[in-house]
Image (cartoon, chains in turn orange, purple, cyan, yellow):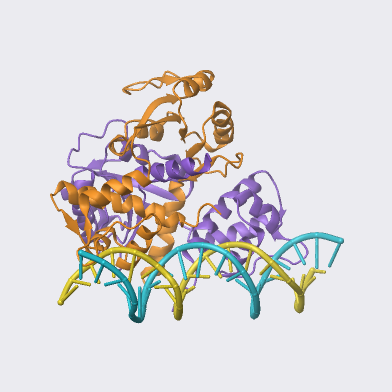
Length: 207
Length: 207
DNA sequence: AATTGTGAATTGATTCACAGCT
DNA sequence: AGCTGTGAATCAATTCACAATT
């Protein structure tokens, strides 16, 4: 049994890291689990429990050194080197993500876009290439991660292409459940469902 | 105690609805929990359990009538009328979301964008208005939901504006934890964290 | 015979309560 | 005195096992 670590703890680790970044920028040296948890929007005990899955980083009576904890979490999350990402489907959303500043800031670089229509290269820094060029590009640039922003109807085909090119992690924005081999990691972001959910809980709340 | 219904069940309800839409389009009349669960990427028992929170919609021995179940889920999710949404922050991502087809298809209409720079109206169908116009627009159009796609530094201020204008649900793309009154529903989408998570689990998987 | 619906059992996540350091 | 780290307890979600129904 490799991973007794809850998925959600890993997710929150990223949230804590963002908060630590902010504290670091503003020159704060030490932080208590109470203060950091407040900033992250969780309970102090949850923060401490989350951290225990990865080690013990604090000093009893004092709290956590911001710079150190930040560094440790970056290590856990593998934030040493810049990680290249390719994107398939250079439509409105795809192009926006190719320009998305937070990706770079957090250590990801969208190195190329792929699309049936390679004329969609307008004001992008990165090249927009044809699907035929995908495999050789991914291999030669040793890319392991991809973003899918194609229409639902062609998302499975895009995923198949990516997998056969050697991609092992996919962030999928297409509203379909992708079928991939079990060693491939897929994470789905369905924006329409996010809105739909929000709408549901909003209606509940107004009573 | 109103809601003993798990958040995740509601989320999956939206996923089931997408699958039912597809089945409906392809003319399928009946579906078993097994088949629908397969399409949705969950276990049959989970699908059935999820449905029991909202009623019983199937026929033992036969399964579920696609059209009926679809209709019932639409009812639960409040998908009767078109729901207007405003968006604050008409940058790359914001503009892409204002054009996002899946929103319309799923019953949401982004009716206006708001930005400090109202010249960002380029090829959008919807008007891009100044922040001063937000409150009166939201009130006169009876908008209840908003999308925040401004930079992190001004996201809290955007949220404050929205809340005081009468918005009660926010889909937040800015990488900050928003402070809002307790009756406001916030859902966060942090794309950089999604990639970071994916990267973490990808690294785990390659062993 | 097939398939739903659901209590009971299990598994997983969160919170509590307090021992252990500084 | 203050705060972390963590086993135990609680709470929530998932899965099992099977009775109920067509």
